[in-house]
Length: 276
Image (cartoon, rainbow, N blue to C red):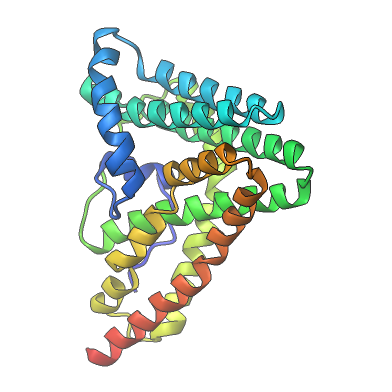
């Protein structure tokens, strides 16, 4: 059994230095082409990648204010601006040779802050605070499952993730501490559950073939298409059509969809053991 429960060095940050195991269609077909058009301008302006991270956070927080003020279409547009900038900061860092751990931590933490603000705004504007809280935590677990399964799929396939070199700077240490506090518990929990379920499904027969089946391309693709870019696009559509509460139910539904997906993975792993 080689499925790791370790989140070293930074859990969800591992996948950002390599191609994702799954294809997120909204990202690939819409936001990556748009970010390719915007990237040369950002390079010419000599913007620092952290400045773009802060700009995308500002757009997201402004969207939350708009949603709370029932300016739903404005909020929808700003969320897509946030997504566009969010897909530019990493590409800008790589294009200019300024990939840093501090920037990666900042990006991930900024997304969490924006998500919390957006769901607080949805709670206010829908008058459904309990559903909004449940939807927020459901989404956080779905996003964590996406990132961790993608990373583990790379590992099982023999990929070697590349990490930005630590600098030991104060900002990096502070952000690293925040990241560990905010994300490591759920990363470790999800990896532990995944490993235990794999062991229960395969017993002593946890062969490489079973591991490949457990992290098959359909699994990582489904999870990729429950990622943040798609989530914010769906939220934007719900806002445009004046149905913010619908998105809260969809966020909860995306978490519930993990159950049949997990059962399917276990069935594939057992089948691979029997076939081996």
